[in-house]
Length: 462
Image (cartoon, rainbow, N blue to C red; front, side):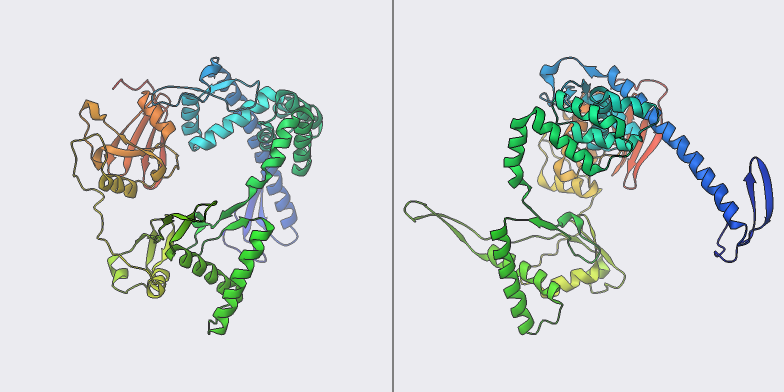
């Protein structure tokens, strides 16, 4: 039934299929109930098909994992040199090790990042090998796949006996248990079968303390959304310092809300600390051993020429530090109130060709490549370029230049996969790459990854 753009109270004539027969006529308030029932029945049927396909998918992944099990446990996650495959312990004790390179290939087929692919394979292996009762109910369609995989994710760190304990008590009720119940059962199993690990986890509870300022969660207005977990004495001291400064700002004429003044106060505390030289004293004698110099903070913004000359209406900047879009008006406001030094650099030519003779990559070329490609250029990988290796697409030893036109960021795992000749790629234009593996081809460009379909034959040797 196609309702088009009609409102709820002005529905057009429609045709719906009921028990195989087409029924047409004006849809009125009296008939919408039956039409809705037909749609709900269709949705339910589609949902059943999707659920059945998910079961077949995890069954196939489990069989695929068995084909790529690695027997040599001595190499498990220890050999990470380029070109060497390893048996990856994706699940808990007793589950098979899976070829890391094979996982990379599967992740590309599934359209997942490397970490996401490893996690997904680990959940399936954990479920199929260490939670057999729950696995049997999944294959029978009695437990949703997504729910079983989430349970498997919570048991991967348990010893074999503890995982079996969870499976034995959970399987009959896995279709309806709450996550709080699952967590309690996992914690109970850990205490019963690995008390040393349970005690270590208790001692490590302090590690949950953190300060996340939300630099990677900046919105279009330039606001970072973070969170903290502090010891109570530290939290009280910070609260008193922020509250005092926020109050003073209000007394000095700041008309912003209290929350906004508190946020400004925290920034002031940080900037004042960065301007100070911090002495490091000998704890025994009090003698100053050295001084840690204050340092400045660098923010990188990419702006259009029009915005640089004051035309900020409708303009958007990109923060090079966080890779997030920021309104140009907000950048202008920051520049007008900052007490620091502002440096305007010219636009970098991302397609520039200035090779060097050495294998080592100069900073200027590295900056050119990481500005052009923001992340690992393997299909679906999202590892930030700053955390990647820069790969010579054509090996330097084989005549490949050290130049931006022959360099691309690859995370360490995908760099190893390429070096092992399990995947090949070439740069079509700056920032656009064609990848080929034994199972398919992908085009990676600034818009994302595009699956070009399976290969009919193994790619030729280099």
